[in-house]
Length: 467
Image 1 (cartoon, helix red, strand yellow):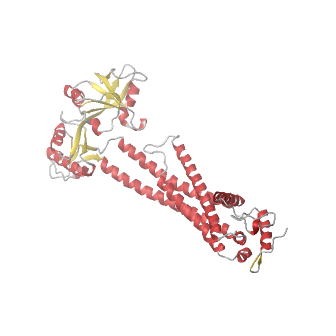
Image 2 (cartoon, rainbow, N blue to C red):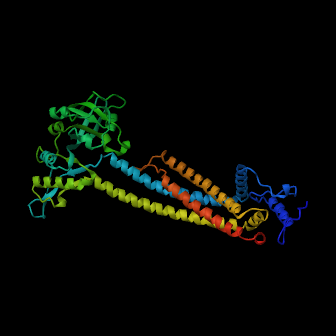
């Protein structure tokens, strides 16, 4: 067949027609310009679709065909993007899993709880050669409740771990805790059945108790516990409540505890090593606000030091645990861990981006002759760049979606296996996914557009001569 004698300068379009036949036989596409198989031009002009939608569909189909014609390069590019996105999301997700697990563990204790125990003070005031222990007392509790204005709530507690509980069906050793009714307002003790201890129980020293979830299962396996009776070291108690399961069943000691009124506990089971009947094991308190936890603790220390006759500035004399301070410290640790894991993920992302850039540069450079042919048959610089932009955008969107999907599937598998204590399954962080996808998209698209623009700026004859 013969192409009509259209020329442009010294360039013969008959030559273009021959290139068109050869390049089509090699499965190379020419966007937005059709090589006419009958060797003629419709109406003496190049044929373009009159419909913008048809044009867009044609370009998209040509993009797919071009990517399919270069399967290996397309696969390597997609793998680099998917690997970079997936690695970043998995590393950040693992860090967030650690953070979330620790936060849940702290929440299972209670909100802004401060523990105070007895400590060691000089046996002779002003000397430090010999030390003697001191115990907190119920009198300390009353003074703190009355004088410490920055303390929202305080609870006296007696703990015993050497008592044995016996029901009609089983027996179990347990930690028994005696506390005032406001204990449940400071600590996280969700009620499953029945009721919690009340003021009437406290005032009348009733022999009633509330069982932890696992303690209930130990003493009443498969049987109702509310209203039943148990013996605690020979003393008969009625079960009035059962706590819901707290945290992971085997990892939370509150599930195997037994709770009774403070006055009842002090009457039947006082502190075993007590120096006086007024001694208690520990106090739990809650500051009026999280920001004032240290000031509240200072008030408490001054009251205890005054009552026991030692210097409140002697920090070694106090034993305690400030969960507010611990939570802040752990938060900083996990923030640094997130930064570290995020940094590792960004390095992985950068390596993936370098791979994408190399592949795209080689791919586009090798297609310089194709670009020259596209321009020779009427394609504009804009249409050439538009094709390469669509190729980069399509590759990025598809491979990024695959990377996100595979990562989400792996994260979901973590929910099916037993995990260590204080560790939650990793979860997707949308901001990280968006960051990874945008970064790799920019790398891939720019790496494709830059050499494509250089090739598109060449005269068609020069582009067709490139090897």
